[in-house]
Image 1 (cartoon, rainbow, N blue to C red):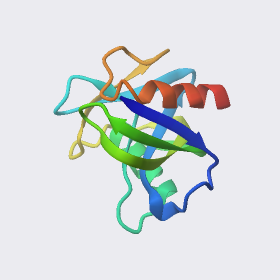
Image 2 (image 1 turned 90 degrees about the vertical axis):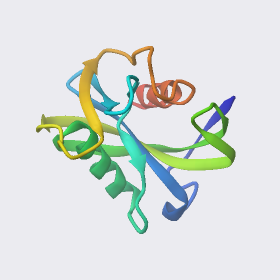
Image 3 (image 1 turned 120 degrees about the horizontal axis):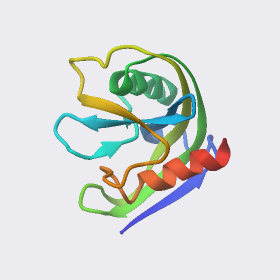
Image 4 (image 1 turned 30 degrees about the vertical axis):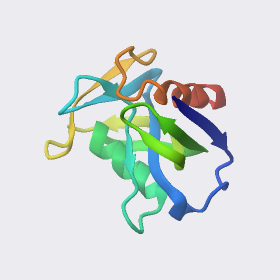
Length: 145
């Protein structure tokens, strides 16, 4: 079981944030991606590189995973994940920053990156990579818009 909690954007220092997750839209459609090694779908996002500001992580991951070339992005909140769901093993809270992006221009999906494809949808699909986490993050963004 996994527990997700939400906090203000300044709840923990940047260095304590491990992940950036981006609820991305183009127009009214949500953009989700599929990793080359999986058949499941996920919101764009990933690990913060050492010394990287979490906002830079979000911009980098959005480009690498969707090909977004021009976009407006803003932080929504900090979130924590605690627990174990088979893919995630966090006995202590792990923190990330949740963002919303409105994508203006998509370029080609970077070929040398890990994503195989993107899709546009009105809601999240059933077959998610992180089904105990992503629906809560997505709903938080929808509630804040």
